[in-house]
Amino acid sequence: MLSQERIIDTFIKLVKIDSPSGEERQIADYLIKHLEDRGLEVKVDNAGDKFGGNAGNIVAHLKGNNTAAPITFCAHMDQVSPCRGVNPIIDGNIIRTDGTTTLGADDKLGIAIILEALEDIIESNCEHRDIYILFTVSEEDGLLGAKQFTGENLPCKDLIVLDYLGKPGAVAYKAPAMEKMKCTFKGKKAHAGIEPEKGINAIVVASDAISNMHIGRLDELTTSNIGRIEGGGATNIVTDSVTFTAEIRSHIADRLQEEIAHMEKCCKEAAEKFGAEYEFTHENCYPPFSLDLESDLYKLTEKAMLKEGITPEPIVIGGGSDANILAALGYKSAILSMGMYEPHAVTEYLKIDEMMDTLKVVRNMMDI
Image (cartoon, rainbow, N blue to C red; front, side):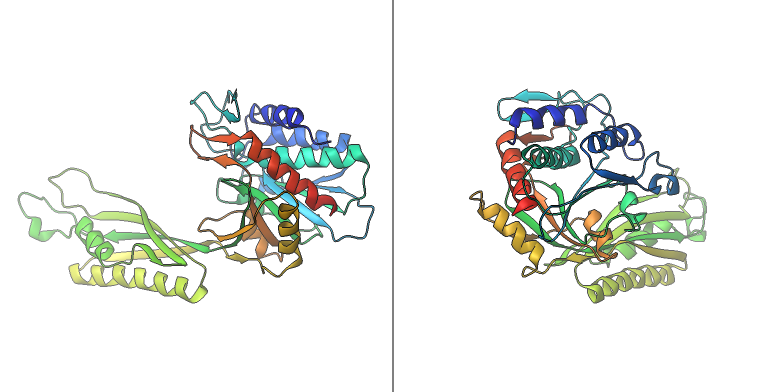
């Protein structure tokens, strides 16, 4: 039987284990032992070695005893800082922190839900499909664990990712690709009070370029943002170097490339206008992902929710997750909301009743 007391206890244990991105060794060891003690086959890759982390991605498998299609449940082990010394507080239907750290419901709530559903499957000795579990590292630090994941230990291509905020029912089935840009303008130094006409102010060049860019929500499926600009020094010196960083996200590949090209065009034209030089670079951070709403995975999600009286709400999101990276390896994903709120903030909290509703949905998916 699913136990509210047990899942709360598990969640509290998990959030008390410090696990900032790149330092998931302690929680990984806990999870490996927990899963092996319950008879699951557990494999760990060397993802952390490739980017300076101290742990790898965990794949576990519980062999099924019926002919239903296998399924994978996915969550990440790392937590957004400040996350050391978490002091969780149970306040009625709410679990929150004392306000000095993040709670870690993102994504230890996902882990706790998976573990409790699995516990009930094993205890009840019921018929169930092949169940795979994927716990990744350094998701919050640029999806680094997923980027080093090869898929060799995970043959099941259908994933349920437990990593979204809000009340149960939301099913994120589509997310954009994202590109990061960096541009440096090189002007010319001069004394700002004596001979400013001999200088080329890189701040002015950058300002002109940015003023002509498309920034904000460009359409329903595309966004653009300038994240940081830096350079300059004393007011009596014409600034000779300025760098800005930006991002563009879109669900449409051609639109993404058009906006990258437009941003670079603005930089080039501004540099030519003022006689400066510029260097513009961009890199893809993650590809898009999209799940067919007629797919078996979505239909299973829908059925599991309706069984609990929850109305499925398919949504398109603007953020990136492990699902984006795994899509490039051929994995299909649905990302579920699970009753957490205000992630990445020290005000983060979860609702116990909504956690339990999500737990029932996940448990249903393991055996229906």
